[in-house]
Length: 377
Image (cartoon, rainbow, N blue to C red; front, side):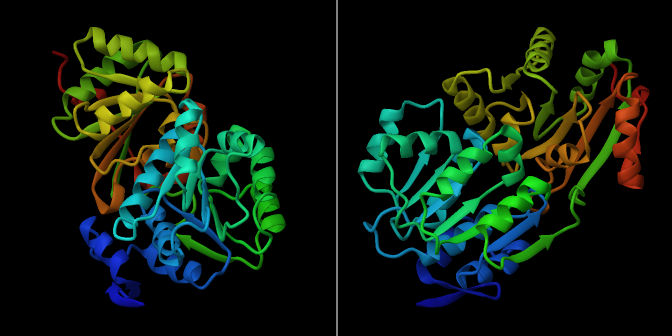
């Protein structure tokens, strides 16, 4: 019985108590809109800025709708990356803390035997990447015949990575009468194809304008010669006296080169990208999430699962490829109403590409002069 209020949402005692333990006092706008729709069993399409509380928006109703344990996997959540898998599973575990539900994570780069054991113990919720989940289905180590709700989180990024065939196969292993919830920052043609094929009369929820960074983020850019970027970034980092900084580079190789250059300048910094082992990625993420590491350099795909409220600064060492990519990067800061700063370094070779982003953002993006930065130590 739902007998406690979370804002205007009526929730069961165990879930309301868990949200209180997490420090949640009122629902975010997307939670207020999405939770009742999912609780009513409707299919849903959600478009929202990062940092809006999206995971809890589907996590709260999923936990509320769970039957008693032991009936099989009741909810399946597909995500594009290992890091996001860990992040989402952690949130679901917190929301279900007083219900005792079991959440299994299935992703590549981790010994599959560990996942076999988690599945044998009985999982009520499975969170995973499409490739590893398809692997388990082919081995017969997981079944989704009792799944009531499927969530496709960051669906556009899953398709960017090339997971569309796996997604379609996985959905084919779930009951036709399941509830399907899809979140995507953008709605390209392949996403619309998935919607028309697998969702039934979905409700459409949009929170915030599409491809618009959150208002709490101060957005600035510096024009700098390509050869001067490393020194300029170092100077900028010296002005960031608190919080944590996430730097984006376009490729794994550029991530490694920047990390090496900054380490030679005496900074404590680590890299995260798809070329690292899972243990290396996990160690870097745990250090960053725990506050032991204040500076992390990442590629776009590797950073998709980073949801850390204490990230105060984003630096685009390389200009993003498009506005959507820019928004995803900037959305790593300014989480849940906090203030953040996003700085972009634009070289002579990137002026044309960046101009497209600058025109779309207008006066939200401010030009700064490098001479105003603190002198290099």
